[in-house]
Length: 256
Image (cartoon, rainbow, N blue to C red; front, top):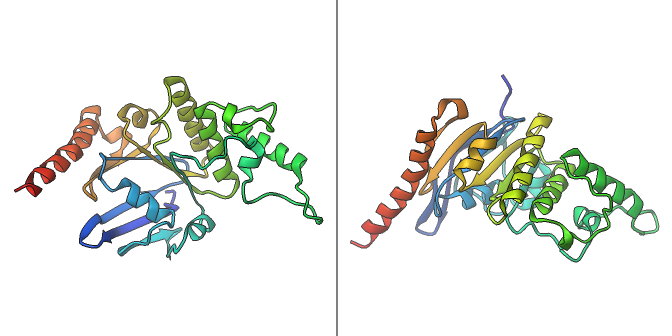
C-alpha cells in the first residue's frame, strides 16, 4: 500500500482562549485528491496555514514520509515539499507569465543577467504539462483568464518541488468555464501519480468531481472522513450541513 507523504496527528491550534483546531488528524497520499470541506469558521484556513508554515501549532505533530517535522516558516514548509496556492494567487498582473512563474527565483548568468529565453521555455513547457499551451509566455498575466492564472500558480508550485499541493478555494471566484479549466488541471496533476492534492472548497459538486477522499471539519474538529466510494451523496450533504448546523448552535448558545 502507498504510504502517506504527509500525516497530521492530533493537531491543535489556540489563539489565546480560542481553540481554532481541536485535535485534527489528516493524511494525504501521492496521486490522490483529498477534499477538505467545512463551513466558514470550521478551521480550514488555520489548518492550511499551519501546513504551509505560516502558523505554528499549539500541539500535535506533522510527519513527512513518517519523519516528524516542525515548520517555523513558509520556507521550511516549501523545502519539505508543501506548495500552497491561495485564493489571491500572489501574481503580478502587469508582469509576464514567465516573470510570475520565476518571481523571486529568477535564473541568471554569471554576470547577473536574466536568462530569459531559458525561463520562457521552462514556463511554457511546465504549463503545457498540465494542459495550458501558451504560444507567448511573455504575455502579461492580466490578459489571462482566472482559470489560466490558477494553472500558472499550480505549475509554478510543482516546478519548484511541491509534493503536497494545497489549493485554497481555487474555483470560488470563477465563472463556470474557468472552474472547469481548474478542475481539469487538478485531474491532470493527480494523474501524474507523484503529487498529493488537498482541495479546500465549499462546492460539494466540484469536490465530488475530482476528490478521492473527503475530510469534513466543523468548529476545529473532524466530524467525518472517508473515501469517495464509501460516501453516498446524501452523506456528504449531511456532513456539510452538519458543520453549518454546529456553528449556528454554538452561536445561539453563546448568546445565553
